[in-house]
Amino acid sequence: MSFKGVLIVIGIVALGVFITFGVEEIRFRSMNKALLTEVKTLREKSQELQTNNINLSEDIKTLKAEFEAKTQEYEGKNSQLEEEVKKLEAANQNAAAIRAKIGSLEKENQDLQTKNDDLTKQIKSVKAQLETKTQQYKGEISRLEEERRSLEEKISRLQEVIDKARAVLAPQE
Image (cartoon, rainbow, N blue to C red; front, side, top):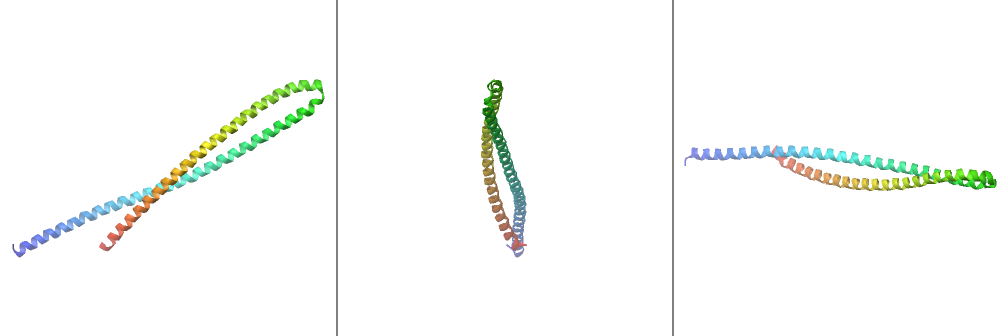
């Protein structure tokens, strides 16, 4: 083989090497762009999850405040019922008036007792609902925190890949 032939072979080999490097660089840049897009998406998702956590915490606080207000209201109504019973006992001095009064007050007392029982049931129902919601929110918060940790780990791994890729590209530029 002549010197010219050797040069042609060397030229073809060099051209093949340059083409391979070009293809690899294009593939690497494409992967880098995809990774950057995925990191951005994961960061947005993480921000969204943090916002959801804040909203859920605020909802829990609101429900607790409503529950406490209802409880105080029902305790006030219960105190009123106790005062009515005391008034009925004090009015027991006049027999004829008391019999008529007792009949109506017993009816009123029965209605109030029914209302009190209904309110007590409602309190229990609200407490049960609040407990259920609280458990659901706790479960959701736990799930969201786990998902956030997972996303943060993915972001961290992706950032390491990007940093490595930049480190590899930096000497070539």
